[in-house]
Length: 278
Image 1 (tube, rainbow, N blue to C red):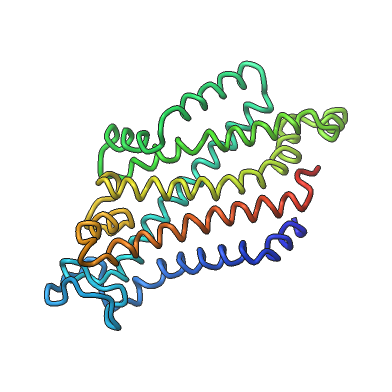
Image 2 (cartoon, rainbow, N blue to C red):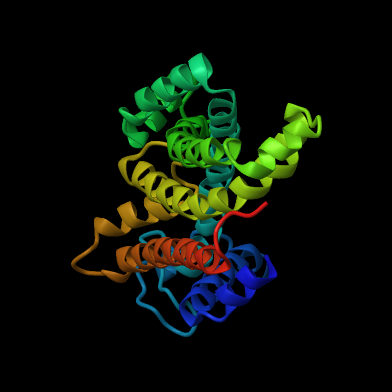
């Protein structure tokens, strides 16, 4: 893994993507604590102001500071994206290991379930879960997470099928190692880097879905300033005050691009390392 880390940090694009994403996350965490304004603080005397020294990102139609609303909204949007990505990674990795290692009927049924989930758009799953389990309670998270499971399951399953036939697994069995030992020492050891690569894509997809849900009024709703909500609110004044939409759109785009670049960097560093090992 040391070689993979060296390869990753020797790539300036990957390092820049990691630094930018870390800076955005740090800003979202810290700025609401130091801002002189609250994210829902109304000041009609300063409504619809253009960016200035006092309000670097300007103000909205109620005079609320857009900079602090972007920071607070980033907390919500990125938290949803990373949480659902983690949920999908955990469930997908377990499913892939179970299907690939057990084989037979377990593998066949598990992959058919994954095919069924993949046939339903993630956005639709999120809307259905939010409607069935109660809107406005964050239940759309489950739909986004479930939609992200199949890619993990397929990638992990393919790796496990190869690992299961390897010489070092055969040697472990010959020495009397049980299934739990083989999975812990050989399977997990090799599939976790693959899951890490997929995780960046999963988080990026979840970020996209979350912002679309906010844009169409599902999921996180006003007055909480999720990035999709901010983009939608700014869209109504796109001609007169385009920055109200362009700033959230830029933040969303930057984070998605950084996540994909991170995934590419992790994949390339693992390829340079030589792929899976015992």
